[in-house]
Amino acid sequence: MLTLGLITDLHFGPEAGFAGKLRKLTRSAPGLAKAFVARMNDVVHPDLVVNLGDDIEDESHDADLARYDACVKLLRGARAELVNVAGNHDTAHLAPAELLSVWQRPDLDRLYHSFDRGGFHFVVLHTRERKDHDVTVGDEQLRWLREDLARASAPTVVLMHHSAADQDLRGNRWFEGSPHICLVEERRALRTILRESGRVRVVFNGHLHWNHLDVIDGIPFVTLQSLIENLDDDAPGRPAAAHAVVHLEPSRVVVKVEGAERATYQFEA
Ligand SMILES: [Fe+2]
Ligand SMILES: [Fe+2]
Image (cartoon, rainbow, N blue to C red; front, side):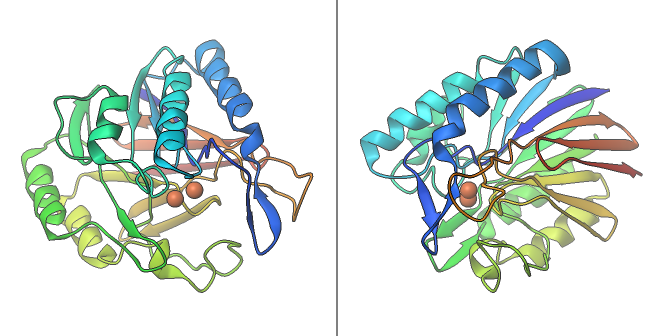
């Protein structure tokens, strides 16, 4: 069995509102991230810590690089291997090479890759958002994904920032009516590749700042709530403090969403 600690959308940086209301409790980000690391070390003891992206609230190149580095350094305090996924705010002002340098992955030359751990295959995708326009993975990445999954023989976990599900966005305060900036444009083709591999057990993403589950063609697509999302309508606010603990077995996946809004999902192959 393999245990993962998942966290997403930490948004280190300046306060951010939406429609004039305080929505991201960025001021709480470092403290909540520290609490997550302490819980991983004291209670959960995961094999991997997975950071699904949007480490920062983007502002400028230099501020973003300092905050991105600070966020990843803090997560490295967990005594587990750290796996990072690039989010749209992370790449607003920072180049892929800068993210890879903070990830301490000089062996990579792009932000998507795969690896094997503990009897599982892990795929990290890079979903690219053009602000207010679209979210894509591109033909080259789709081709790579098909080939990578064809080579793999282990049960597989996919990690990405935006969602590949067809989510019903009604009630999402950030994305209701705006699927083009939260769902991957090529999601149908991407899901076909995942389905045809026959090995994908679960797909995790962040970005939508809510907890959401879709099961499509037998594959669970799990969206994790942002660590710092304000559960109230405005200031002073109440952070979601969300993270997830995932237990992976070859034919069973158990996801426990922790924080202010808890949930447990269990999937059996
Ligand atoms: Fe985010
Ligand atoms: Fe995002």
